[in-house]
Length: 162
Image (cartoon, rainbow, N blue to C red; front, side, top):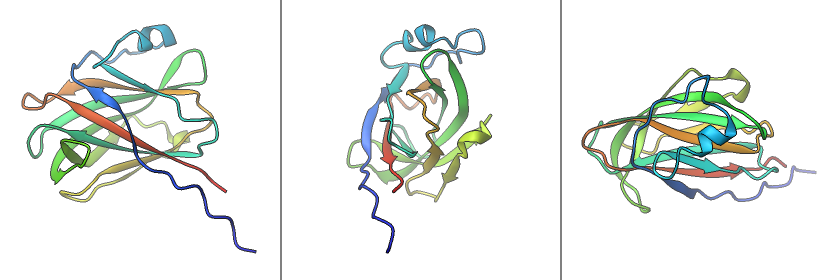
């Protein structure tokens, strides 16, 4: 008998970031500290307990090759831990939801337990796929915003394994 087809997972907008802040660092990773950064500085999202993997994509409103840097954190209910740092380059493909897709995602400081995999195609849609590992909440923190970019958007698709 063939395996069941997994549930269709569409990209959903997670929010937007407009103000860069310092990376919270090891002394500022309590849930209260990260979550108090506020609108425009951090995007908080809950993955749904049943999601096995998360696919992220980013959009921005700047010009081709503008860069922004995001920190991805996760928690299992108390303190946050860093999963990766993303240096994103904006491409030229127009996004239906607004802005232009980031075509190059360059991860660093990756936590290998999450098995992050990036997909980059020039002037297309860059993606980053990671395992959920049962985390209850994720946080994207904007730490660098290029001067010609005013807003960075994040979208996610929550993938389910049969």
